[in-house]
Structure formats: structure tokens, C-alpha cells
Amino acid sequence: MLAKALPSILPRMTFDEAISATNVYSVAGEIDPEHPLITSRPFRAPHHTVSTAGLSGGGTIPRPGEISLAHNGVLFLDELPEFSRNALEILRQPLEDGKVTISRAAGTVTYPSSVMLLAAMNPCPCGYYGHPTRKCTCGAKKVENYLSRISGPLLDRLDIHCEAAAVEFSDLASKEKAEPSSAIRERVQAARDIQNRRFAGTDITCNAKITPDMMSEVCVMTNDAKDALKTVFEAFGLSARAYDKILKVARTAADLENSELIEDRHIIEAAGYRTLDRKYWAT
Image 1: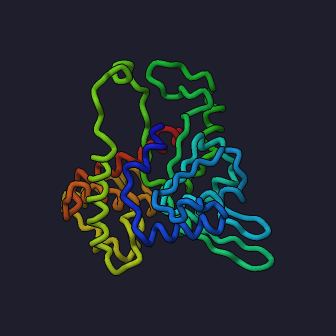
Image 2: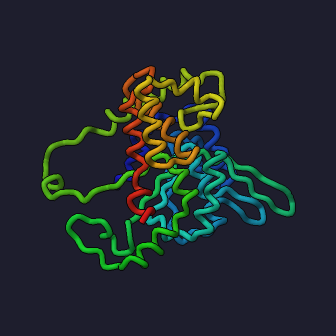
């Protein structure tokens, strides 16, 4: 339910994004004649039995796969370790490049794949590894085999890692209303508007797509933020990709606060979203 709610807080599609998504759906033959223009961000949730061709695209006449059908929207992969290793590994380059290329004897076709990848998984087959009160019944080797289905390079490409704790009964039974999606979306839209002004005249549409040569200009930090990033980098032994992703997430956290500079709290927040690999995969 939480995953399906994500599109409701994402920024509105621009006209160019709508046209680009519509082109993909047109090629795939999935256009609704009554609503020919895609104006809502796509949400695709393929089953874990999907083939590599179904995910990335394929066929004698190459058709877009799920990753392209989610272009400018959300690709949700539930029960991530249950997907085949080949299917998951084929995602790496499209996630990096924002496009997927399909080669056949008759030629090569490239489809866009600028997606927000949302993935969910249990920490082990029984679901209770690391649970504060329930006992895991899997055994160490079974847990290790389960987690090893997610490769380090794929994990490194995920900007944010977040652990969802068990919901308390009091929270489920509470009649207190949570913040509506519309209010959250306005904050997200305000941050995206800042980014639209920042990247006006370029092909960049959001912080996630900042190129290496733009980092120093766009991700300007206070001295305390620089110290915090250095500490995090050395303590966690981060890769260059993880370093860039922390900076981009911190830039977004600053935008949500309408802060021109990245503060140390933004670095600490962004770094906090990259700790699950140390908790579960470093065992």
C-alpha cells in the first residue's frame, strides 16, 4: 500500500515528460484511446517471475519492457531477492544511463528508462532476521544465501536504503489523521521547482541526474558539511558512486528546506539512508 501511494506525492509531470512517456506506451500498444496522453506518472509493479526480456524489453520486433514502461514514473520490485539474478543485473546499466538498448539482427532500438526504482524485500525468507522480538527460523547460511541474491553493484545504485519497522498496534488503532499526500506533494513540488530553475537550459531534470562535472558547482557545502562527509566516507569505506549519491540526496534534503547550502545535518541525513548494507550484507 505504501509503495502504491508514492506516485501521489511525486511532482507533476511536465509536458515533455508526458509526451516522452506517451511515446513509449504508444510503441508498446498500451495507449488508452480515451486518454491518449499519459499525464500521471506511470507505476509498474511486475511480478518476480518476470523474464529479463519482460523487464528490459525484447522480442523479434523489440518492444519496451517494464523499465521503459515506468519511464518518468515508478518501477516497483516487490520481494526483490525473488527476481532472477539475470533480471536484476540487467537493470544496472539502464538505471545508470536512463535508457535501455535492445539489439537484434535487424538493428538496434533504444528506449528511455528514466525511472524511480522502488524495491522492497524481507531481511530473510521467514521475514524475522534482526526482528527485536520475533525469532528468525532460517539459520545463518540460509539468510546469507538469500541476501547474496542482491549484488553489491546493484545495491550501490540505490540512492536510499530504508528499513521499515513493524507497526505498533497503537498506531494502527489510532484515529489521528496523518499528513495528507497533497501536503507532502506540495513540499516535493517546491523542491522540484528549485531544481527546475537550477537546471534551466540543460538536459538535467532533477538532482539525481547531476553529472560529475556539475557536482562542485551544484552541491556547495558548508565547512561543517565537508567535515561530516569526510568522516562518513572514511568510517563507512564508501565507493565513489556512494559518495556521489550521498551528495545528491543531501542536495535534495537542502532543497526541501529551501537551503542554498548543504549543511552538515543534510549530509548526516543522507548518510543515514545508506546503512542497511552494513547491517545486513556485511555479516
